[in-house]
Image (spheres, rainbow over the protein chains, first blue to last red):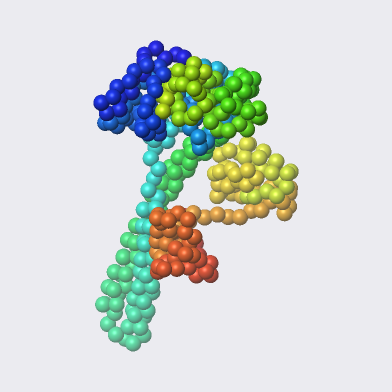
Length: 282
Length: 118
């Protein structure tokens, strides 16, 4: 137990202080757990050390709970500052991922959809204008064929050609912008791809670290499961969740209290002694 | 480029390693080459070596505003933002104006030539 300051629980007007705190059964244990994790309300607050990751697994021990045994056990090991061979590389990867994230945040992804829409729209108009040019050319030829004055038809054709040319310039500009956006997005994706590789590598190392921690604690955990009050002899990795959680909590070095809502112990003090941890007993 | 044998995959891996600048993206036993003559050269070289264990296809950027009608884009947006996550598309579309799965399956995309994009 690394706890030095006693825990303070405030429920409305009631204030309790200590390492092992017995609370009336009317208190909602899930709300207590949330308060330990910093989610205080006006009516209920718990003043204690910040819970470690293992608290996610054994912070509220009750019938009907579930537990991921190996993850919980590995985190119990971490609460005791156990280390593994993978730790250094995991830390290095974390640093690299943080760095990548900063670079990713710095280069915003480009609004390529906007350009795609402009290009699609522009291309449609360009096709229409091409047809208009063809039609104007046809009318001019018809005027010539019939010996009609061609001034108006020439002007119409010139105008259509001018419009088409402007449209082609606009389409080319949008296409160029899209090209640039694609180029920048490609760099952005290069970073994301790299991040994904690092994350995969990190997940593998994390699994190796967990296995190594579980190995280190296997015997201790088996012994703890055996001595849980009322526990029957069983595969320690297939014990009922409450038994598993109690054993993990006993192994862990909990800074923040666990909320206990089970009838395995004769008294709150007995539970506190067995667990060697601060507890809130409901 | 997609490879279909261990040796072709190995060759692809070597090309990717040696000519990183010509590779847009790698996916296991497939890779996307730059649309340059050198990219094509590498692809053709590997096909020469591994015959039909190498597939070469040419990809294009997809412009949804040119390739599909607005109804398809809207259906995708609204289906992905549906309130009931468990509803399959057929049920989602049946009570609306969204195109059915069958309608969409039977409608080919507009050819890329008309896209006008890169």
